[in-house]
Every structure is written in structure tokens, then in C-alpha cells.
Length: 202
Image 1 (spheres, rainbow, N blue to C red):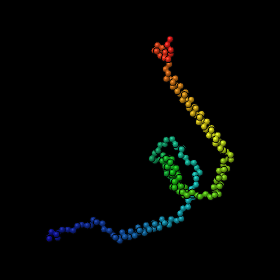
Image 2: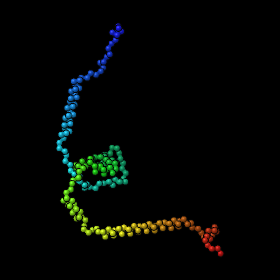
Image 3: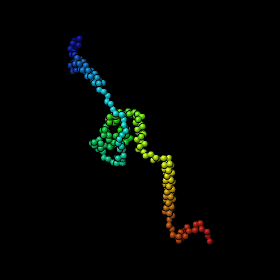
Image 4: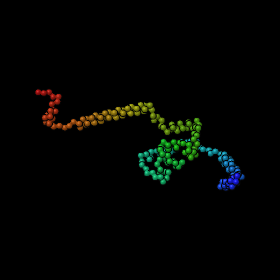
């Protein structure tokens, strides 16, 4: 029993003491800020009205850099890196198929201020468009007779190409046969016994 009285208690002073009131106050402030943030996000204002989609008025340049080599450095600006650069979205796309997908996509169209919806055309607009197309093409410029003539002409050209191809093949065969025939002196051929093939003996 005397031994039990001499034992000392464990020192717990290294453990951190938490002030419950302080942390409850911090939690309340954080909840209040989150609630204010949610209210602000809901009350952003009226939605942005975007224009409907319209067709491009410029030509998409996919072939200007075709077949060219380019030195690419890691410190080069985006517009000079390998691939297709979109100046609207400031991004680089690696190939032409993805570039077309990008410029026709939602992100790019939104950056241009357009929604992905197409404006519905009225009957009057469609009629005006037909009139424009009729005026652009001169009347009587194309008939079925023109089509028949073009088909006949195309067939004649195809036959001419085939005939020329056959003639070239024949010429090549003749040249090849002439190259393969060795030029032998007739006296030497007679001495070797080559001169009498197929000839009748006397």
C-alpha cells in the first residue's frame, strides 16, 4: 500500500486544450458566410441574352500550314505553338478535326456571344432566299442536254485515256524485248550453232 501512495500521476499538459466557445463561434461565422454565398450565386441578375447561331462569313484556314515543319519551343506563345490556335478562346488544338469541333462547339460559340439555338426562319425569309438564289444563277444556264453532253464528253475522255495507257504498255513491252535481245554477230552465232534454228536443212 505504501508503494501505491508513492506513484506519481501522468503528465497530460502537452495535450492541446480546445476552447469550445471559440470554435462554436467560428462555425457559426462560416455557416453565415456560406449562406450569403449561396444567396449571391442565386441572385446574379437576369440571364444573358445570346444571339442565335449564324453561318460563318469567313473561310476556315486548315491547309495553310499543311506539310510545313515548325520548331516548337516550350516558351513559345500559344499562337506560335504546334497545332491550330483559336484567338477567341486563346487555346491550341492539335489537329484539324478537333479544331473544327472546337469552332463549332458550345464554348467557342458562347465566347462569340451566340447560343447553340438556330433562329427559326419565316416563310417570307425562305421565299426571299429562293429569289436571291434564282437571281444569282442565270436562267437557262443548265439543261438536261448539257448534262448528256457532259456525260458523253467524260466517257470519250476516259476511253482516250485507256487507249493511251494501252499504247504506252505496248511501247514498254517492245522496249523491254529489244533490251533483252543480245546483239550477236551472225558469224559467231553460226559457229555456236544458233543460226540454224527453225530453218530447213539442205
